[in-house]
Image (tube, rainbow, N blue to C red; front, side, top):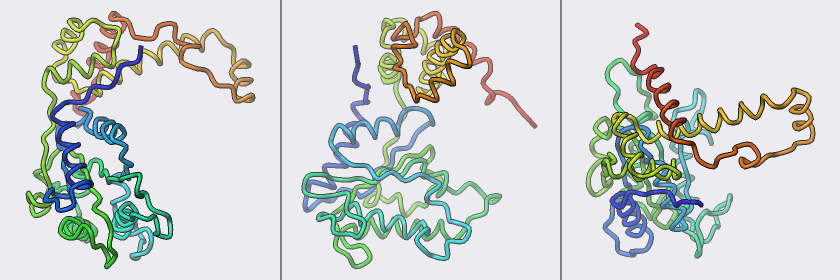
Length: 292
């Protein structure tokens, strides 16, 4: 049986109101940017993607690497500021009349999602070198917030922006102004985490899920995804031991593909396997070690 992913009601409401306020309200006073900040590995990006998909919103996703200044961009097509502006205009083109075609038309709306924004735009202290690219990106983002329907002298529709990150306090304060960005602090409650993990291990009773979380209270949601992935990886290894290298080579040659059911006898990880893998991961957590 397939279970719908769990989305925190508060986070769902924040995302939905941000998208509706920017895309459907003509005389909106919603800020253009929704900033979702919180601890790493707690499902911010996953939940944003899920809500956008459920609402039929196309996502233009930007990674921190795309916002880094190229070594020899010379302000050309690879310039991050020009790239950001170009993608915004393209997403806000109602008719798709831009040279590359528009993401947006009468039947589809788009939002820009910038993941891990604090890694490239954050102030990490005096030991970190910053380029003028950082200041220009801030300027471009604030310009989009202040003039969202007129970009580079070109009329466009509003394109809501959603940012994710771990620490909003290291971003440039003027960008965080309430008229430009709405800040949402995402830290899952015990109930949130139990609901999310119960979807990962849908064959485990709820009371056992709560006990698992209590054993590792400091572990993020991503930890339990890793545990589940490791279980299926172990099953795959067991299956591989039943085959010869000749069998595998023939499969590659024939480009044969298998479904998970062909390999995994159980659809869900059993409780004893979850405990074993979680304990192994916890003992081998390199973040607890010092390499100095």
